[in-house]
Length: 317
Image 1 (cartoon, rainbow, N blue to C red):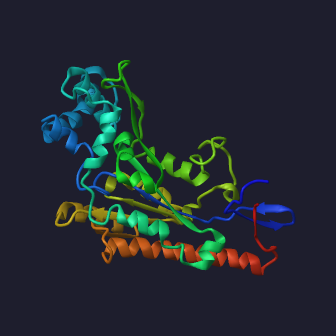
Image 2: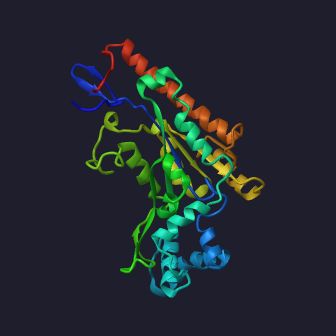
Image 3: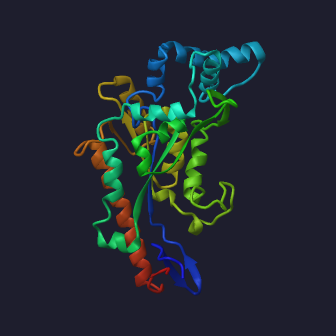
């Protein structure tokens, strides 16, 4: 006998219908969950001027095009600069273990990680949600370092993360090569991996051909949260497929406010708010409300199936 699974099967003429019972909250990291960039404490420890570092990085695409006629990805070229600094000794001893350690020093906005914990538990008191096994899952999709995110306290609430991965030298003393990158365009690939359940089933790839019925997380049950124009590709994929989109701006930052207001005017996002996830704030209430709204839609769909030509769902045992 297999152990009891919190999964339902609905049978109609011997055909299995998979319940779309997952609500996925997908977060950007820098300036969305934290005030600033995840690399800030690294610069502080190694006494590197952050502004000068990013100025150098931002000049690299033009430099390589002019000097070598080589196009580089502006979203991820900073990884090369980090590796170069490590090899030159400016980031001496910066390996993956040390990157994970910086996870504990991230400057999270108010209400983080509390809103992660609350939203994962908020549907458990609803007997119908419990019956249909409707649940909330959190994901982080970032162009930053995956190891830093793994070192944060958020990892206990997150189903999976996507971020840039670095390979160490043979002695594992410092970062030495690029292993995996994600940029603001390939974030959309992560969304389709969540949609298809790639992170839950090794037999499924992002290129697997799956009908909508077989996809684990419906795009209409996704909430994507980020901070600005760089996330337009991800905003567009989620919103264009019926999901919800939400933007964050730091308190008092007029430039950031104008950017998210423009995103709203252009129809990229549904709502935006000041970066504070404490209970009672706009961000907190909107996210919680949207989760409840999605849960209610899922309940209505499943109850409609029961009242139609579908047999009663049964647990797999």
